Length: 313
Image (cartoon, rainbow, N blue to C red; front, side, top):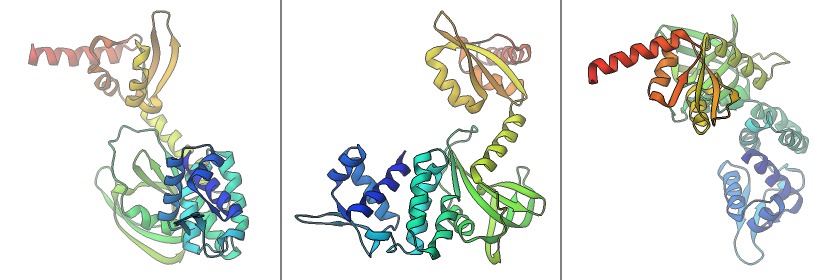
């Protein structure tokens, strides 16, 4: 995981002061090209890591950062922790490294650094959406999360109805290039799709956040609620084992392996809100898949097949 290496890279440089890409690669057991890319990523993010050309050169932490990281400015500390934070929930080693780095930071920076590390969660499992570019608004909201500032939003729901709200931004989630804002409102915790936010104004009002709030756990609860709504109908499907990754890509969390058959096929259970939605996903497979236990899904497949036959013969 790249964030692990970024934190480890900074710790190595803190202890040595100056390293070459080759020395770092040997220390972290990665390729020289990977080590060089990680150093460049830290530098591009605003962490004071710079190359020193010539004999005896390498990469150095500058501005007094070698001994206690006090050379990091507040902005540089936030930049580092925003890079590392999303991986921390999944990697105990990164949690440990972040704790060490927090202790090494000047006290005035620690709050912002800890907030930055908790500001973003990355969830790579798709909900059937196409890839999108990172919205520019994410940076604005991320800054509000870190600085604990209330935000005024103009928001459009799925039906296009617009509302205006004053929210406490608690964290951002990147779910396969779709961004969500988790926030506190007068009605409690709410989740907003960033691409449906029509207008934003960051205020000078201090945002409130529950003392026991943890973004990864909060997002897990959001996902559980959405998955329950999206998986009202299920069907068992037989397909060759080599097609299992494709089915998982199509159905995401709604594709569970149930059995491996002796003939080289697998039995998987897929789910969606309606039988038609399952059938629409499977219709393009033709005879490569077989639905074995859901009459409504089989009926929808037959209807779709009849429509195609009637039109195309």
